[in-house]
Amino acid sequence: MTLMLGKKPAVPDPRDFKLRNYMRPYQFPPRPQQFGHEHLIHEWGMLGNDMVGNCVFAGAAHEQMIWSAEGGKQAEFTTQTVISDYSAVTGYDPNDPTTDRGTYVREALKYRRNVGMTGADGQRYKIDAFVSLEPGNVEELLNALYLFGAVGIGIRLTERAMKQFEKGAIWGISCTPGKILGGHYVPVVAKRRRLYCVTWGRLQPMTHNFYRKYCDEAWAMLSFDMFGKDGRTLEGFDVAQLKLDLAALGE
Image (cartoon, helix red, strand yellow):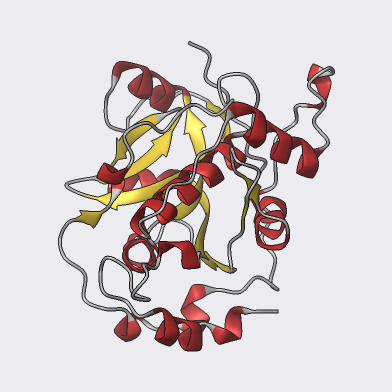
């Protein structure tokens, strides 16, 4: 099985909205020890990340799948639709392998807000806002994950981590991590005994220490698709109040 990466290095930008500037720790609702709705998705799909370096867009589709499922709807994506969005942002040409150069996450986020990911039925799924988190800050990650349902993270993937995935083992810290293979984008979707992300079509556990050491960027995104018909998330968060709280995040 071929496993591709595809996230370009994180490029800090002082103009990025930062979650800590808008929501202080005391403003987050108390969270349980374990949470997440990863069980709502039975088939994640590789979505082309075994063919090209489109992990940023495969991850975006996985995020939308879980937001829609939380809201009681269903969003489906195909390899073709995900790769088409990858091409739209990066210039990838399926007929020219040399154009498969990966993605800057920030560029993908802007595209997702302004244009949207293409669903299997042609529908465009947009995010409403995005904010950056402090890379490797576990507490901030958990707060954002509980509130927003998924957090997209960039990691520097090591040889050891690749072998751990292939063996179905937890991503953890090793005294012999091997070289960094490249950047990879994954959505974190649950907190159980470990953190759980989605990559290459399946759930992958990671330790807090792995996140602290190898994360180089993290983003929380607001999608109103995660709210049900009653205007609340499955955790009971109110969409009207959240819109007021996050009004400053718009441009």
